[in-house]
Length: 467
Ligand SMILES: Cc1cc2nc3c(=O)[nH]c(=O)nc-3n(C[C@H](O)[C@H](O)[C@H](O)COP(=O)(O)OP(=O)(O)OC[C@H]3O[C@@H](n4cnc5c(N)ncnc54)[C@H](O)[C@@H]3O)c2cc1C
Image (cartoon, rainbow, N blue to C red):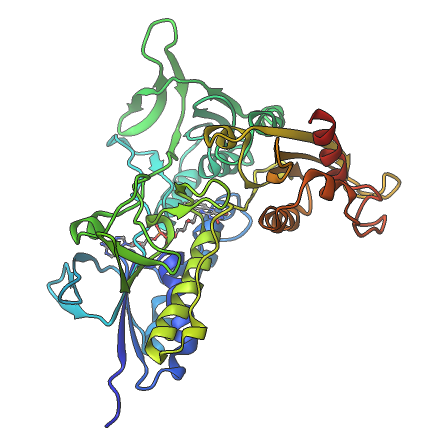
C-alpha cells in the first residue's frame, strides 16, 4: 500500500514560516509517501525580505526586488501556498486548523509562525504610517513620491525607527526622532556607544529627542498630517512640523491563536517552546506542534532568562531545527534531531552615513539587571595599517564579568567588517573566553586588511586595566 503524504500546516508566511517551508521542501523526497505542505498568510506576497525594505526606501533598489519569490513559484512546486488567507482557530486535540474562509485543514505537524502584533498608527490622518511589512513600505514610498515632504517625524529609536529616519534624511528631508532615554538602540548598545551614532547622525541634520515625552496630538491639514505635538505641560509641549510620520514602536508577539488553543505563553508575552521548538500545553511539550520567529520567546545564552529577540537571524536557526525535528520524527531517526543554542542576539545594522553597528551578548545594563557585576574596555583604532589608503576607524567596547573576566558582550561602530567581528565574539562568548585570552590571542595580519595589534586587543587591555 502506498503511504499517504504527511500533512504539514504552517501558519504565517514571514521569514520564519518561509524558512520552515524551504527546509521541509528540500527534504520532502526523503519522506516515504511525501510531504504535503500548506502555508497560510494574510498578505498577498510570496517570500518577502522584510529586512531589505528599509534599503529600498533609501533608494538602493526597487521595492519589488524584496519579493524574493512570488506565490506562484511555490504553487508550481505543489506547495499549497495560501496568500490573502487567515487562520481563525487551532484545534490541537482534533489536529486541525480553521480558516476564515470556512475550511478546516487537518495536520500531522503544525508550525505557528505568526510574528508580532502590527503596530498601530492611532490616527485616521493620511501620511502617518507604521513600518511592519511590504504594504507599509509601499505606502511610505508612494507618499515620498507624490507629496512634497520636507519634514519627517519618527517615533522609535530602535533599528526600524532609525533605518526609516535614515531613509528620509538621505533624501534631504529634515527628520526628527522621538524615543526614550538614555540613547539609541538601548537593547543592543550601551549609551556611550549609542551616543557615537547619535552625534554622527546629528551632524547630518537629524534631530533626536530622547526623553520621556510622548506624542500627545497629531495635527493635519485637510486629511494629511502637518505636525506632531509632543509633551503634556505648557513647559514641555512642542509642535514639530511633519508631512510624514512613522510609528516604529516595538511590538509584542502575535499569540492570540496560540493562547486561545491553550498553548503556554511566557512572562515576556511570547510563546514558550522547548529547545527543539515544540510548544507546551501545561507542562507537556506537544511534539507535533512547533512555533518560531517573532511570536516566541527565547532563552538568553548568558542569563538563562526568557527574552524576546525578534530578528530574522534568530528565526532561520529555529526553522532549521524544526525542519530537522519533523524529519527526524517521520523517519524515526533520532540522529537527525536537533536543538537551538541559547540566544546571544548577534545584531548588525547599517544606520547611514556609511556607519555600521554591531553587538552581541549583554549590554552593561542587561548584565546589571541580571545581577552580574561587569568591567569593560573601550578603544577606537584604524582597522588597517595607518599608511594604507582608505584606512577607517572602529570603536569597540568589550564587557566582561568582573569576577571570572569572561566575555559577556561586545559592541562596535565602524565602517567595515562588523558582521564578521560580531560572529567572532559570539563564538568567544560561547567558548567562555576571558579578557586575558582575548588580549593575548594571535590574530591574522596583512596591512591592507588588519592592524598588527587589533582594536580588540586594545579594548581587552583597557578592560583588564580597569579590573
Ligand atoms: C523594517 C524591518 C527591518 C528589519 N531588519 C532586520 C535585520 O536587518 N535583521 C534581522 O535579523 N531582522 C530584521 N528585522 C526583523 C525581522 O524582519 C523579523 O524578525 C522577521 O521578519 C520575523 O519573521 P516572522 O515570520 O516571525 O514574522 P512576520 O514577518 O511578522 O510574519 C508573520 C506572518 O504571520 C502571518 N499571520 C499572523 N497571524 C495569522 C493568521 N491568524 N492567519 C494567517 N496568517 C497569519 C502574517 O500574515 C505574516 O505572514 C526587521 C524588521 C522590520 C519590520
